[in-house]
Amino acid sequence: MKNIFDNDDIKEFRKLLDSSERIVLTCHMRPDGDAVGSTLGLYHLLKSFGKEVNVVIPDRVPRSLTFLPGVKDIAVFTQYDPYCSRLVDEAQLIIMCDFNTAKRQGDLAPVIQNAECAKVLIDHHREPDIPCDVTFSFPEASSTCELVFRLIAACGFYNDLDLNGAMAILTGLITDTQNFTVNCSDPEIYEIMMRLLEKGADKKTIVDEAIKSTSYDALMLNSFALLERTRIFPKSRCALVVLSKEDLKKFNYQKGDTEGLVNMPLNIRGIVYSVFMREDADCIKVSTRSKFDFPVCDVCKDLFNGGGHLMASGGEFYGSLQECVDLFVEHMAYYDRFLPEKLDKLEYKS
Ligand code: 5GP
Ligand code: MN
Image 1 (cartoon, rainbow, N blue to C red):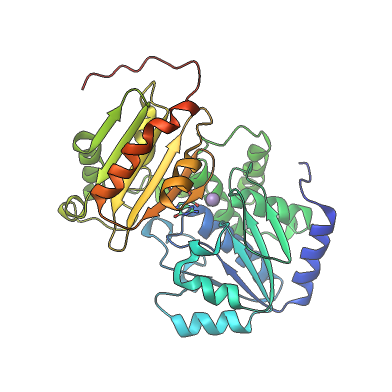
Image 2: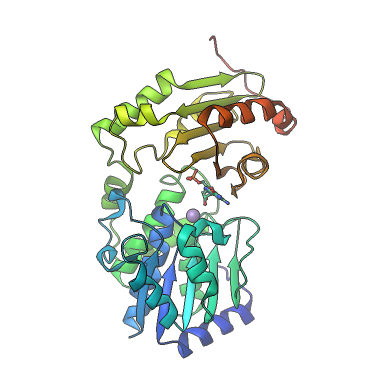
């Protein structure tokens, strides 16, 4: 496996690890498999080195990830604010995983950003803007978990990675690639998977727990969304899925229930990108996915104060759901210029 890192960065990272006894690992709010997997992967490794290490995250781990060893040790800021703040204050090193901008930590952001200790960022989103002592930013990586594995290997810690750590890291690799269906062209990620399987990581359990673990209500909500709340815009090759507060309530919506919904319209031949808007309590959460390098990150950046990856991005809108829909529909034609020249026929009759 090639070493993708700058040798000085690795040296500096190792120095920071060696000189820090109290380490905090943290990730973005609404944590996904990659966020939880990358922090827990490092957690198990650093604990085995005898460090006093804590995972401090903005809000709760979704039900689908509670199978991961170590989840019970995670300190959740929305539940134990003073405790989390104290852990951060006392830390000598903070390792931030899977986010590129402080805002993605919500109310935990100022606590982390104001901490005066050394900081390291490990991430695969575009254009990170967090000041750090060492930044490992690789937007081309499949997942932060891939980067965590590569870092562990580059630091010479591979033999120290135990089964718990391997489970966590493989979870992020699997969830961020949607079980190796997107962002999975780099042959080396299969080598990484092989190494993790060799450690005993159980791929079937990860897929069953983290992916194939929807509730009946969630399945019905997603079916309803596709059947009743999806509009196709043939000229722009876009599918727009919109769920209101009332829709969510009707199906007893729980956090995480619409995970993956935004991907579904991309299965339609001829559709290039998909936009999902969900009316949450505090804002309209926007989630986008695309094919053929169509830059949905620009859509999120321009219209929804967000960002992410070229073909998987998100943002937030503060206003009514209708205003959010209108804003997007008004600007949609602008993005037609990014559609590929050669398009599959879109078989669609409204
Ligand atoms: P998702 O659609 O799964 O919520 O997010 C897709 C990608 O976009 C993720 O990599 C995530 O980090 C990024 N993303 C989601 N929401 C936001 C947001 O509000 N702001 C920014 N900058 N990125 C986001
Ligand atoms: Mn990720």
